[in-house]
Amino acid sequence: MAFGPAPVRPSTDVLAFCLPLRRFGFLLAWLLLLGLGACSPAAGTTVSATATLGPGGRLIVIESPRPNATIALAGLAGGVAVSGRVTVAPFEATLTGRVYDARGTPLGLGPIHVQAEAGQPGPFAGTIPLDAGVAPGPATVEIAELSARDGSVVVSASVPIRLAR
Image (cartoon, rainbow, N blue to C red; front, side, top):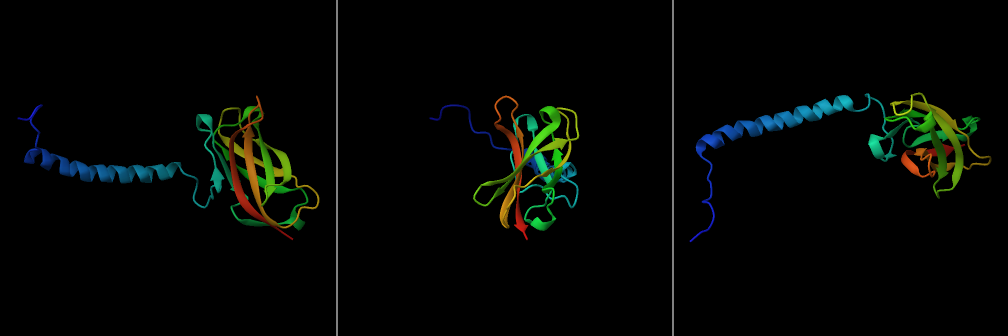
């Protein structure tokens, strides 16, 4: 003797109704994915190689330098030029830019200014000055928002680059 309600078997009417819905659901999912493409960066924009999503939907996207770009040290009189955008402008509209070598040794540090009101999305651009005597080789550019409270990283993005003579 079985306990509980008897198993329900779908009738042919229910199956006939569900099959078109499954097809429509696939189409709806496909259209949704296409629609999300409208929210992604513009064609030709390279998103940073590494980014962390911070609290409140904070995101930093580095548009320049592009990942794996070769940057000539001879042409870096002022440092490494960076640009991109943020989804939420940081406190005092200032990010921190850093350049590291392959071992993680800092090669340069500088403020990067965001062109937006606090809490609003906007572009950033600036130059990260390099220390004297930087050697050619692999490096990483990191742009970070630091906490005004304790200096910890709130959100960051980085791109690998190659410094050359």
